Image (cartoon, rainbow, N blue to C red; front, side):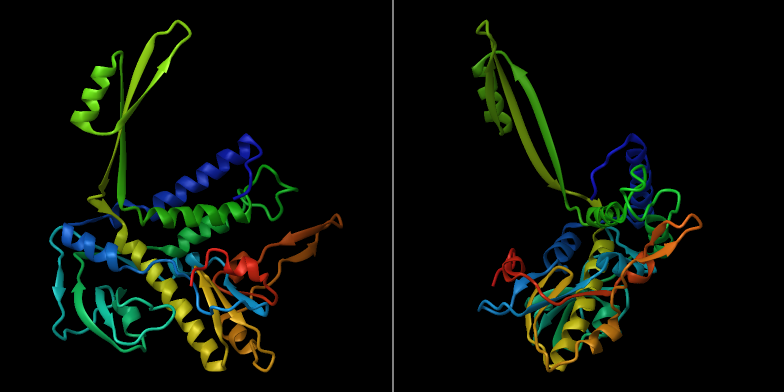
Length: 346
């Protein structure tokens, strides 16, 4: 996110941020969990993947990075499954796969994207999975809620009176980095699962504050002014899970992301590339000049550079390619090996 430089820009940023949050974290998409459903989704849902697959250092690394990857996965969604207290995980007995049911599968064979023994996957993605697996359970929904994700993305990235191409020319308008932050932040909030509460109180004696710690937990500290008067502060933090939330919606976006990366990785391996590592929405591969990376770039799309057009007064204006680039790949031919392995465990 770019630094907010003016009040005008702050107001426009907050306006757009609030509008996108209201459309994504909409009451109609809110689910209510019982304990079984909550644990089913929380423990087995798809998560961002950060892993390094080759143990030796390698300086010949390229990167394929998906532009606005999670925005692209959001655009694939037309309906949000909503879960209520009456939905429980059920044993799978060979029923027909439903696109919007969540299935707990046991992977008989796995790869770098499906690298866990058990995972939850939506039915429409399960139909496309070519790995060997066994379906153990499924979680149905109470109803489907329609969502216009194109409208959300259009408002975030293509609101002309809010957005500029270059911040240095329009410091009162928000930039592409701001847009991306707003979208990713709203998507991230869908995955919230814990509620943090903090209570504090003040007493004048240490005995009182120690009694509060004994009865309610937490800890305390004291402050003393210049006159020697002491005050004792009791602070108690507690955490509890949300009874309501957007986990089915959030899980759908991350499930889509995993499948999108899985398709690209499978195609790269078929071509003969070695996968060096994966970092959320970026795939690192070992250079191989004998192979044609253009086959991948043509299939999934290569990010197009912004172009400049001449205005009537002869000034070059940057024309953004945001709309065309959503979900396409950035191909970075040379990557610093130290940057590559940062945050990528074996």
